[in-house]
Length: 358
Image 1: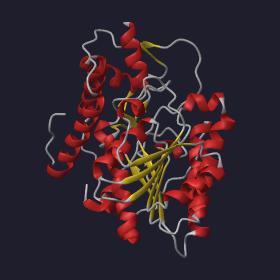
Image 2: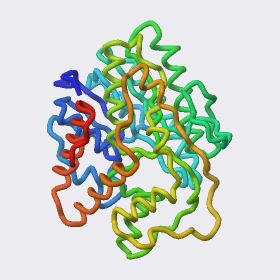
Image 3: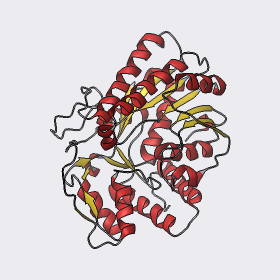
Image 4: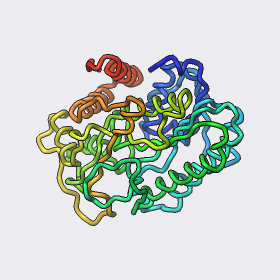
């Protein structure tokens, strides 16, 4: 990454989440001055707990559903760049509590954008949504940014609503001035430090620790899997472009793996099983489960054309880095140091095009 981030004032929501903790460490390494907003970590252990404290960062425990709190934090932080990652991100949880999902994902976005109307220093805002914002006809064609938004489950629908909210605020309040704003739609993100419920990698690791195969609800479902550093590099690049060359930046952009790396849930479990040397990595889950898309693919052509961003890690490399992380954690390693080494390895890969061991 460039020297753009040195001493740059950054507001980051969702710092205590999986992607937020990775991004916090990366921003620290880049020299940014970060004001972070998040709730208490939901899991123990948590990646945030393993990586904290972060140098040059101020953390606020606050709910993005509280507009007054966000107004105060934005006024104090005077951000130049904003990354909005805070969200209810679990599909199955959105079925259990749809009201809270819409409150967080829709009104949380409204509250942040409203607060940014009074942030004169803000130059770039990246609103992170999901690859699931598209109306999915299960045809298996990679979704492009111009495709129609939709969402059958509350999580997907709430994120599609966040896309519309962002477009509305951009047109209504920021067209004549203020920050450049874009949404980022990432694929299924994996990597070390995720312990959330109802996600494949954490479920796999927990099952492995119990000495059992993971139980898969939809083993044939295809997803655009990618290591967490890939979309985070995209978010950073997007923010730089918005701040310095907004006319060439997309207003909505996908970040996903190479099309050859799309894989089924079962395939991911099998590759992880090989990495952890397990003879039987998965079995089908019994019972009935909420409906989820079976085919989800993403085109990242726009990111390549406008930002010069391309995915670099293969599925095997992605899962190998992930397995290394969890094995190191189980062995009692310094996880902040290892996470930083994986970021450094990825930075080297982006500079040279040649992978280096993490």
